[in-house]
Length: 179
Image (cartoon, rainbow, N blue to C red):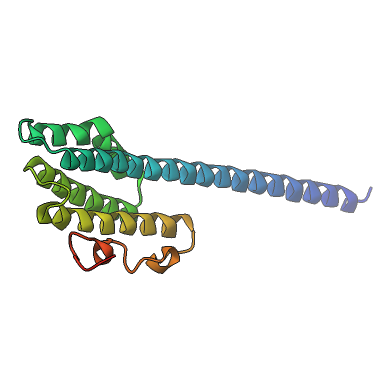
């Protein structure tokens, strides 16, 4: 009896088995990576949506600033009700360092805006805009970090016909001669 066909069959089976195991392992790794990317994308969006809700509420408070109400308490409630603290914790737990760092900067700028509104700043006041424009710039820095991480192409203010990200160049309060 010749052993060559038996050895060739066993060798072929071993190669096929190894290929199947490797393919399975790669597929599993790709599924895990895809799941992680989707989870991060969701948490990045959740964070910026919560910040946006808070930003909108703070603008409403500043626009309808009634000296008879407790702006400090209402501005603090805006952060809590928007869910920004929970979204930030999720960002700290699962976000990458680059996105988490820009998210934290955005959060700090949002809190500065909250302090201005809590102290009674109206939307047309310099105090409001001193906090507002740095917040807008931080939002765009966060978006840019997320886009980089997710492999999207970069955006530029000129894409939208804007001179900059923070809007100060066209702000009628900050630049009275602006359109």
